[in-house]
Image (cartoon, rainbow, N blue to C red):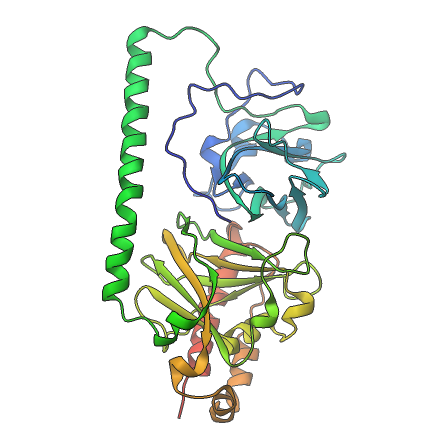
Length: 395
């Protein structure tokens, strides 16, 4: 997901809700919304649980409206919107500015999914409503939880349309102007910092001649979110050709974060639903993460990327992440060995180790999952990261 926290305040702006009705006592979702995910129910006490706090039965929830900003004036925007729970699993529905099951309302900056039946079951131990962007850059500002027929069960606590005292108005204007000025300064300084980092970091030599997969800066805020999502070309509007993932190639990610990012191979057409791939520590360095074909096929449990892979994702591993570039390079330029030589030198017991440590958690659950599912998923990735280290050993 290419989500960025917006700086401009929207406390003084009233949200247009078309013909939908609003409950006068509705609880805002602003404290339950992170990286495009509304936490309806969570089975961990420390996680936000909107339904309980709002006094709403999760069986009364029929949909969601995400209020967004469509950035960069892209010709086409698209992605997925849906639910994640025990009963639904990872349920994606495609949205877009045209020719999709759900059409985004660009004029009113909103994306709405409304079901004819309740989305969640009473027995669901965790429940989430989420939005992802696959094409174009979209910022999620807020979200409304919808009941039957589109009744809004939550608001953004927008103030009534009354005239504010002059002093408060001026103070708000000064805060907004200061925030915008600071944001502009940050954006101006960012390129200089990036250039300095590139001059001091020891990057793989082949990066200069590698194929650029993405060179637009993208971020996630450290909640196991996604900074970059590239939909594959077999999907309408897709830009990523998975045929480029071959044994003689590696993916290099330039980043800034306290922990190395991960690659997620996502499929909704028959492949591994949500395969999390760790960076190869023997080839990576601070600020440069390398992902090999060996690691990707081991975690995806298949080499059939062309037929089944639907999205190539770069996400954070629990710390705020900024990705400046993603490139495809020759593996030999990083290891000095050909793919055939690597395959010959790989110990036979490696495959057994990977198979024994394969995750038992529901791999269709996204990184935003809460509770026991997320814990199991993270534990599985940690175990597999250890197994992956064995894969990279060379004679």
